[in-house]
Image (cartoon, rainbow, N blue to C red; front, side):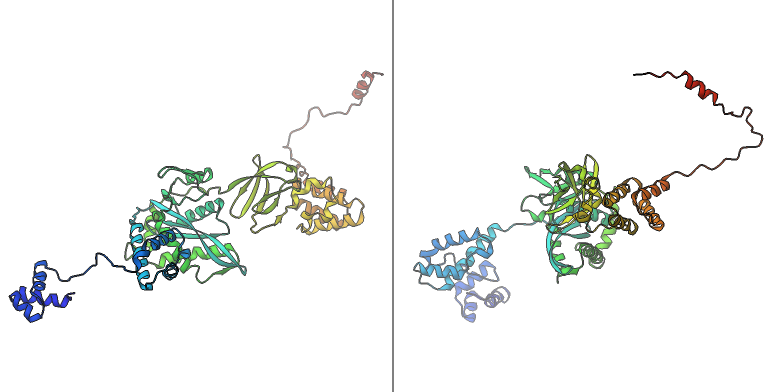
Length: 505
């Protein structure tokens, strides 16, 4: 094969120095046909490509090898056979050739397949305030000394690249709502569009083209903040490529090495500060000379203003058990015992559980994560204590009842001194929803100071404290006198008695 140096010498001799083809061939010790080929083609390099690769030994096994390669191509990469394994299997079928022939053929076959399936990505450009992108990732963290896999929500402004990440224990709809509320407050406004993948918490059904049937509650979120949801085509992550790339960046820069915090509240406070720090210290990838924070300051004027925060709950029906408990996410929560056996609605927030029946809140608890936890509110069982006052001693809801000191002391003394002390104590507790805990606590404190320990004394003191004060005496203006002062006349009462008619049976 002619080298680039030989071609250069031939072209210099003929084109520049004017030598003949014969003289040039003689000086450079090449044939005249070679000189003619270089001059006629006007090329500076010649490459030889073999059109047909002879495979005298492997040829008989090519069809079998391609069948194996095609079958492996449908599998995950970690399950595909290597060239060495394929070579050993060919040997078992009688192949006598070398490993290099098999390896080269496997590499050429994979290159052809890669060129056929390789996708083309088109760069996207967004106007200020036009769109944001949303996605989830899973990151290992350590919370309170225990390893936890956090579900991290990523929301990113497409124009300025300003982003927020929020960690949660679940990847559920109420977490999606909470992430949007936090992000919109962090951005100080809302974009006109939101770009998502086809996550089940937002999309009920994929229709033709870009049409989607969105979840009702998710649609309410979009309507509240006045942005249009746009779902990507299935398996088309490049349509929200910014947030897809952000997942890898955040994993490398924020979660490596593994971060350690007490709980999700501390973790999210740290993540928010890191997002702000990143925006202020890193250059914008497109607009050189400006940081992400600089471009965000310009984009903020194009964002839609924020309405009041969306009531971001996911609603679930639940049945109240005979123990006055409702179950959700493998945990149980107490409700007002007057609703036992009924069907209620759970309003599930990111960190709170609200139990509602016909618009009335009958249970409000901090949300628990994990499994097999039971959360009691002792006041939910107060109506049942009227019939079962003995449950005060061993009832699970009352084991760790945090009551004011005076109220708790009254209960202990009543139970020690009177056979019906439990019932008397329940009678005092039942006044709390009517009069308030502070008023009952003050009445109990007064009874203790008087050393008069009984239900009647506490209720009497409570009744007195609830009475309205007497009206102040008014000073009458001078000169006002009654012309006819009232005179007591008992004779009118006597006449009424004499006129009364008694009916005998």
